[in-house]
Length: 219
Image (cartoon, rainbow, N blue to C red; front, side, top):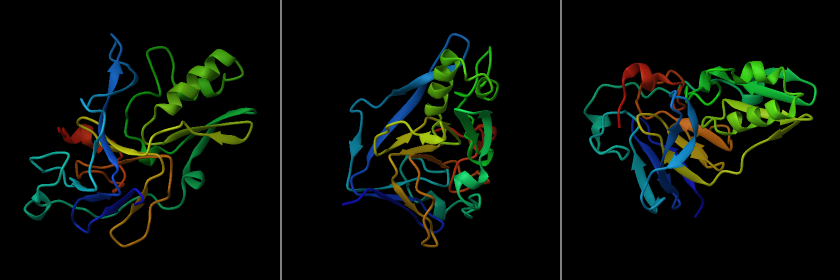
């Protein structure tokens, strides 16, 4: 059975096909900068044939749905950005190495910068192989895929497992090109990595736009 996610109209994410459900959290530096990701579930992955994951942000059994969407007021309107990533993303850098950035789907995970520099400054200096390597690592840790890069005009994506990872107090990180079907039956652009809102506050639903931080979402 193929891994799939179907968005119920006004309800949860229906995950089918035995998709592993994990939890991933950032490893932080002494300065509060995210460095990389770690899997925090004891068994690495819980695998069930079909699960319903909360989308409204109100479940008492997060990340799973407990039916709260039917009892609370929330707006599940699909407002995902129009068009494809390649049409929206802005290019930074130059010949041989480019970084692409699609702001409306950024979840503000923080891997794109540190106390010294950030990915946008680095893109302009990527003729230095040390800077280029660090820039590649930063981009590959971006869970939403808001940031991508191309080498000599060819996009390169990290090799990610087919799974749904719960980011504590944040979105669902869907990786491995799992198909996501919207409530109206259409499908989201199929990508190697996307993040789905689970606080119910995103202005780019079903995609996360970082609103969980301002909303003080926990779970």
